Length: 180
Ligand code: IMP
Ligand code: MG
Image 1 (cartoon, rainbow, N blue to C red):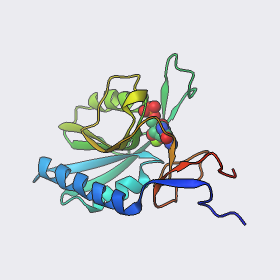
Image 2: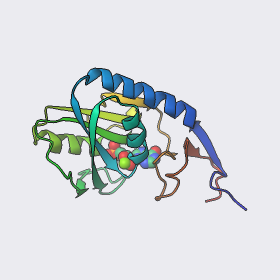
Image 3: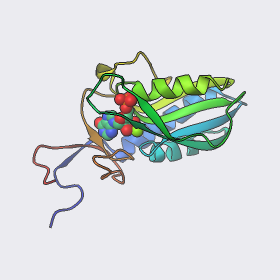
């Protein structure tokens, strides 16, 4: 019988993730000391990261979520991103922290940043658990990055391959002998 983790290698263990997310929470807490914060998670990949980051933040925080779809993975061209689920509440005058799993080409976060800035938030910051700087198309950086990684396809801790593996507790890579 094959298990969920057969043919899968751990890149960052749950302990390493927990330690890094706690550091990020402490840093964000210092930067926004005494302020209120709206955490905006990008569904679905950032769900687990947001839930852990939120619990490591000593701030008065609320949650909102957006979902986006990007057209044509690999078809570069327009790099069009579409909003599938918008914010529930206005972010005008609020401190916003966009919480994303991976900053890859940057198309998603560039799109969201532009859209959110139109609403005139008091501040807008980005926290990305992972950053793949070598893949960048749009010029954008996160204010807070968990781990900077080379061009690897990762799964687990919220991140998927064809919607699977989001529930792995570690950040993993599929190895060549993965059974499918
Ligand atoms: P970007 O618009 O290219 O920056 O896309 C970022 C999105 O692509 C992330 O939010 C992920 O959903 C997805 N993505 C990019 N790299 C990976 C990966 O290695 N594993 C799983 N999803 C990924
Ligand atoms: Mg995503």
